[in-house]
Image (cartoon, rainbow, N blue to C red; front, side, top):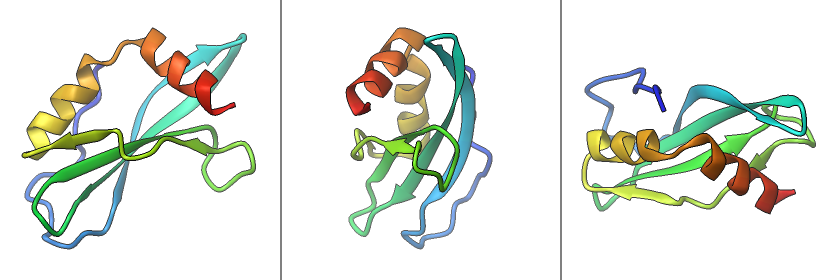
Length: 94
């Protein structure tokens, strides 16, 4: 997955930042995907996947399934996902 973090030197706050990822095709439709990333109070980077258009009834989200000691490690885990994994995640949320 070619996603890259859109920021460097993140603030220390636990505010989540949302990054756009390449969409997936599911049942002939393109599904927008975003990654919500935050740094928790214990310093661990956490992320969840958001599917569908933001702030709509169709939007679906996973739990914080990504967890890493550093932001680059978290992004490596995201890049390791393949389209079929994302489609399976999306299908599980329908």
